[in-house]
Figure 1: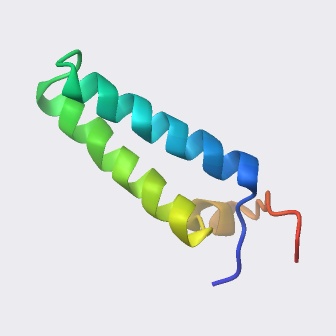
Figure 2: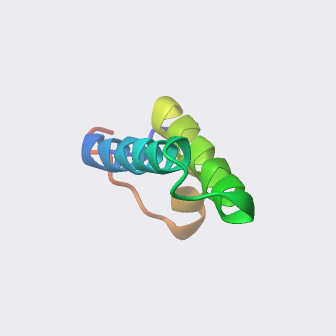
Length: 67
């Protein structure tokens, strides 16, 4: 797995995941919507930690500045 995510992309993904977690914690989102968004947030966090996004690989995108 080669890295295909840049720092800005990782920061945005972590920020989105934190916002979803806060919305869930404050009971602003609940039910199926909350579980769906939390699942997506977990995927965003995992891809941010490993610096690799499978969808970027499929589509040919690469936001990483270093080779």
